[in-house]
Image (tube, rainbow, N blue to C red):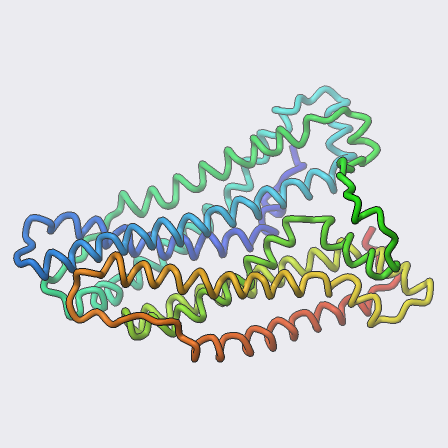
Length: 380
């Protein structure tokens, strides 16, 4: 079946980037954790044992929190893409079902979306393998013992194979569930869903305010991506400042770069979907005499509070996580610096966040201004 092709998987480069970051971090810390376990019997001295236990716990926490969070985000992105893919091809899929193809017969071809995960995992593991000597050098600094680096090929292979199979199976299962619709509903391209209307929703609103509200509520996945984008920016940038003192400058740069890549990538992908999904609305509003500023504000402004909430929660999250790491994981280790909230980091991160996010939103506002009925019809 030519319905799902490798070309379609190229649109999932966002998932590849997220998986790449997850594979990079997990490869480093899981490899280090396995090597830590191998030297357990050689640890001598109370202080050395305390440092050993703390580093073992740190490796577990980093892999669990960072890797788990990134994999969960990738799953949301994948399910969102499959949902939109089925909705955009519903007529073609309906014809195939009418010709006798079963739901499972069509859905099984969606395994190909797992290739985006495979590509990201291979790049992430490869980058981690190249960076690993420098990572071990930093980890061994000021320790009571040196950990010899071994290439844990089994760990590396698992980080590539397991996510690829997991996402391929997830793609097939979710596509199968989305395809379980009557043929006529697919042929009519009826992708509507029942929406609960609260008493507040029944209250009349000015048209532009109602449009802004409905745009935000129409796709909860986009809300999540914009929220998580701001969350990643806030958490990683502020944590990077603290990690310079608590761990190393190398660790600080690694956290900062990964956080910025994820934050900006998710924001750009989400706003691209917002603009594309509201192209017809924007073009029609221009015909009815609405100005460019009114159109762009009604479509994009509703997401600004979501981004600010994400930034605020990211600030509290990174503070709580580092506080736990210092006060719980490293509580018995001597000469560990006391961690307090870094107001300097907040004063730097917040203005950079506001300026950079406003510039990106200004760019997409300009794209909305260029939408015309002719351009929209040509795309259809």
